[in-house]
Image (tube, rainbow, N blue to C red; front, side):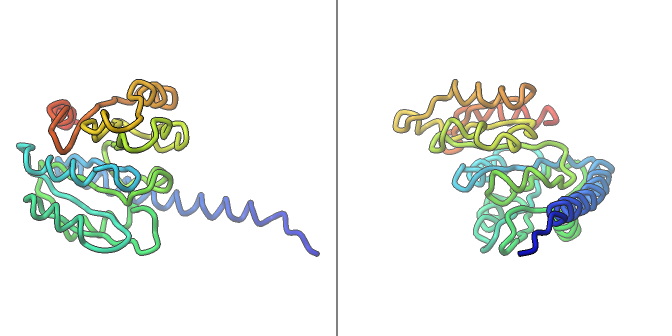
Length: 220
């Protein structure tokens, strides 16, 4: 049996090339957006965290022009919800892919053409691993975790939480019915990312949303 020890090095080199190319495209995206006064926020979470519900309510209540890029593996369901809430939106279906990348984002930007001075949300594919590796050209990263998930998520997926500018703990209206320790989750976030801002909200009931809007208005 022949054992090849070179394969891991080849794999690492290929990954580095892919990420380097993505980073170059992301810088171009960021320059384009910054030049037009557009603030881009990358929303990341596991499926079912409530990020689309939070985004719907934000579109309806935020007193600022908002545009949205929706990432999902299949279906335009989330884009339909955002469009109904009143924001221009472009859907990006990734098929088997588990994340958006800078090239996908640029194509969506060309189609969406968000107005100068607007706030651009990129709702990434629901996944707590892959999206953290790919810069899209955003100005800030938000990770959303719900109380229906484990409070130890930041420890299980440390890189995702380590790259977050803001961590939103959502669905706090369900706290009486689930076993979720908010203080422990906060401690775990701080352990992997001491600089992250942490907010607790209920996107359905509205708890904590003024703090969310204030964070967005403050430039993220």
